Length: 213
View 1 (cartoon, rainbow, N blue to C red):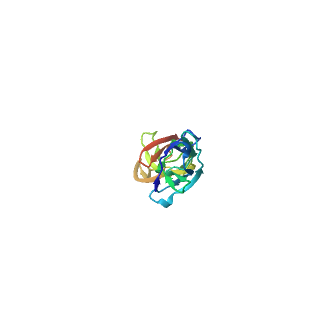
View 2 (view 1 turned 90 degrees about the vertical axis):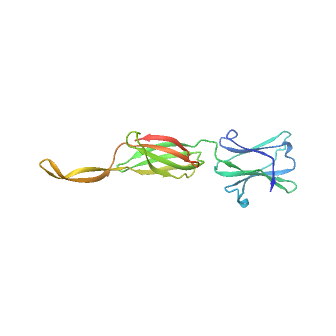
View 3 (view 1 turned 60 degrees about the vertical axis):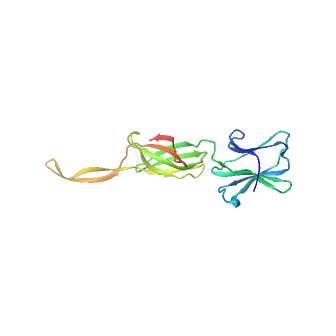
């Protein structure tokens, strides 16, 4: 595989979204066209797929090219197809989105036995899963109640069952004394606070939102 000297970079400044850019020497001598390629597995030479073709500008000074991209966690490279039939390739670089992951439209809908959580994700990349923690004592103690796998920028609707607790009642009472106690499991209707965490591929943990009933 022949190599190609190009400056390859990601940017958020050229478009309203992330972009893949590269810079070449002046005049793009001998280049027929450039092809942007992507792959999820750089060890497999057959996995590279063309995305778009760019015609050389052939300016006197250095030429800069850029195209918008939106699919994270894949690899990109540039192929320069020469007029003599040779093809030169850049090294592969991985796109992990330079935009921060965020969530919007977060709300809860309360029911007797469960809570429904709604949110919309933005700029999803490098995510292992979302973790939902719950507190029923005003945030003093938290419990991990749900893990949500990422599915790309989209709307999420998740049902979380309310916790249960045991209460006792007197089955047999004699002269004011309880001779037989019954234990019963009931729904704990305490007001809940939900904490939405982002767990990255490297295990780091980021609090995205806390919301209470």
